[in-house]
Image 1 (cartoon, rainbow, N blue to C red):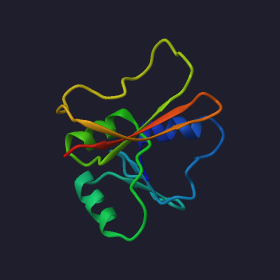
Image 2 (image 1 turned 180 degrees about the vertical axis):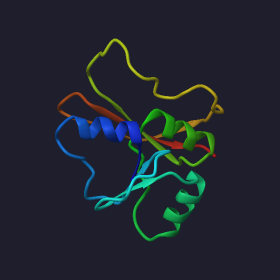
Image 3 (image 1 turned 30 degrees about the vertical axis):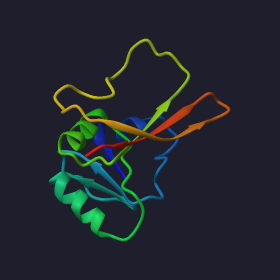
Length: 128
C-alpha cells in the first residue's frame, strides 16, 4: 500500500489508529523517518519503488491518497486502475481529487459496487 505523508498523518490524528496497519505500507514523504512494524517511510524514487513492488509476488499495489502522491503516480503513468468512492455527504469544499498538469487519460468503467450506506464505488481501468 502507498499513502502520502499528509494523508497518513490525518488518518492517524483521527484517533482510530492506522486502518491499513496489517498491510505492508509505504508512506511517501520527503522526511527521513525510521520504519515501524509494516510501515516504511519512503523518500526515494517512486518509479523505482513501484518497479520493485511489481516484481514481488502478491496482490495489487493500493494507493490511498493523498492528492500529491496520486498526481505524481498519474503523471508518471504508474496507475493502472482507479477506484473512486462516492460518499453521500456534501462537504461544500475540500481538496481537488486530481491536480492540474497531468495528461488526459481515458478511463474504462469496470465494476461498480453500491452499499447500504449509499456509498458507491466505481472501478476504472486506465487506458494506456
